[in-house]
Amino acid sequence: MANDLQNKSQLTVLAIESSCDETACAIVRDGVVLGESISTQIPIHRLYGGVVPEIASRNHALNVNLVVGEALSQSGLAIADVDAVAVTYGAGLIGALLVGVSYAKGLAYAHRKPLVAVNHIRGHIAANYLAHPTLRPPYVALIVSGGHTAVAEVTDYTHLSVCGATADDAVGEAFDKVARVLGLPYPGGPEIEKLAREGQAVIPMPHPKMAGKYDFSYSGLKTAVINYVHTKEQRGEPYSKADVAASFQDAAVSVLAQNAVALAQEKGLNTIAVAGGVGANGRLREVLNNYAYPHGIRTLFPPKRFCTDNASMIGMEAIVQIRAGAPFADLSLDAVATIPLRSH
Ligand code: KG4
Ligand code: ZN
Image 1 (cartoon, protein in one colour):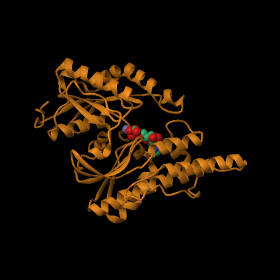
Image 2 (tube, rainbow, N blue to C red; image 1 turned 90 degrees about the vertical axis):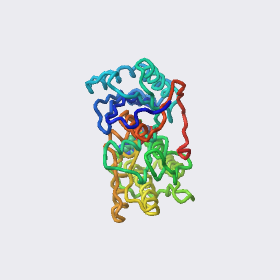
Image 3 (cartoon, protein in one colour; image 1 turned 30 degrees about the horizontal axis):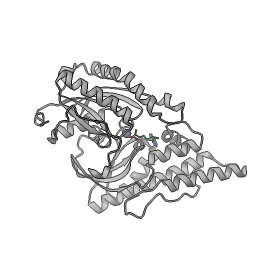
Image 4 (cartoon, helix red, strand yellow; image 1 turned 180 degrees about the vertical axis):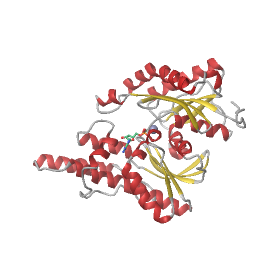
């Protein structure tokens, strides 16, 4: 469908996010969040040590209408006042995505609003436009979520060129798996960060890097941690879980910082914007700043609530797309579990 909103002076979008374990809605006007509601399922999935897809879908179905009502009431607007309905169509858990996509299609159809399909990872990147309104492409994006790990050159508002990515586990996934080995609850990232503050990075860890110039590999690092813990336990030797957490965390974040800074230098770009849940990690923030600062490169992080899954970033990305003249989706829109980053 043709985009007839590209040049409208003010754009207001209602955005829905349901790709994993957060059911969220936000009302975003240009770069400002007018209303936002998140229903988190973390306490439910914690009982199982990770996200159970079927339970996630059911809880999205229970909560989507509530978060939409709450976000609208916070904004003081009615659906009639919004210009478009935006929704995450992928990547994520297929059943979870389907709840948001079906709801958004129904809302758009009933209220005769255009529908904008948003790629979740592009939403994570767009969180930086919300938090740093002066940010303009080109810049380097460091993408660090539960499903993706990559460094990319964002060439303009709708194009990015992936220069390095993980060959196996995503960094967030590695945090979650290591946390499980250490007996920490889901989601593991914040728990590892907390425990690491009490320890020291003194245990040697493999460097999670691949042959490709900017590529990553986290499975070797994860296996090294698992072997270390199992060996200690089998031998009945004492060890410090806090030191394991600190050593793993330093190895995991250092390579991210090195690759992002090296790419920015090669491309002559002076900004690195971080996108995704692991961007909430304080040690990543510290290490990236330490690498980038001496090279005159600035680092941008969204506030923590915009790093992990939320609908405000989806609304912002929808506005970026509309402004760039991207066509609207139609009612044949379907959820997509996997969207290769390199395809964009
Ligand atoms: O971007 P996100 O919210 O969801 C996906 O799109 O995947 O990322 C979730 C990931 C989880 O693996 C979680 O453990 C990790 O982000 N994470 C963290 C922190 N907060 C969330 N990892 C390290 N340190 C944190 N503080
Ligand atoms: Zn995410």
